[in-house]
Length: 254
Ligand code: IPE
Ligand code: IPE
Ligand code: MG
Image (cartoon, rainbow, N blue to C red; front, side, top):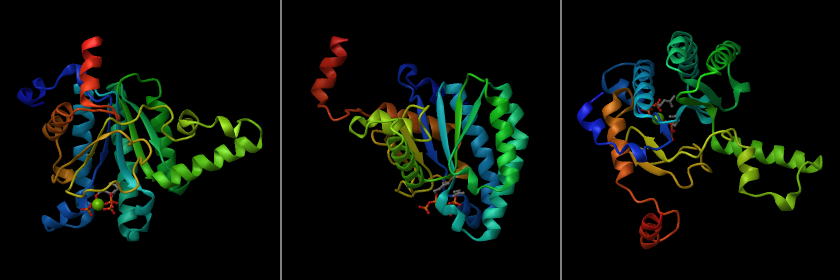
């Protein structure tokens, strides 16, 4: 890792959860005169590099948006290519992940995935389930609206069964019905490729995340870009609705 940049990171203020919208694969490929799939293929190298970087820096949770619910509407050839890339990548990478103590999780509508991909994923989750290092969360066939609708349906069913009192539903209740119930909210959200939108990603969980946008296309995103994003994050003041003065007083008081 680029030592000079990394030493500038304040070890006491490392975001515990980073979420990334890995965007720009298709455009990157086309800019090089290749098919879009070529970009997805190269994007895997960035995933490898960033997972390693997060583990080195000491990030506890990394969520990668790999495929959205809306991405099913892409041309069939691209969807098929992405699915087989996914199966291949998991098969190739799972042992390394396991050796590096990385625990894999998946969030999204698994019912939409081809049988083979589901099987491969299931094995990877199983194999890494006892690991205690970086939690790698893959958002696959995921969208926030799908997740929220799902959560509301489950809550309604539990109300019907008398398991929960509707008057007692609070933030904690809703949180516990989300696919991310076991993870803290992301503190830093990075989107590559120069698009300034959320594209149905963790709408509820990003409530207080710091957002970082970069023009770098995902296949070119490397540890040094990650470090730049973290340094940018560390230069910000997170106020959570309070005033700057209150925060200063609190930090003096503690
Ligand atoms: C992100 O890159 C990967 C997926 C959505 C699967 P894109 O495929 O969206 O690439 P662009 O945004 O079209 O360049
Ligand atoms: C968001 O990227 C989804 C992923 C990166 C997996 P998209 O490329 O699908 O988003 P839009 O269509 O530009 O909003
Ligand atoms: Mg895109």
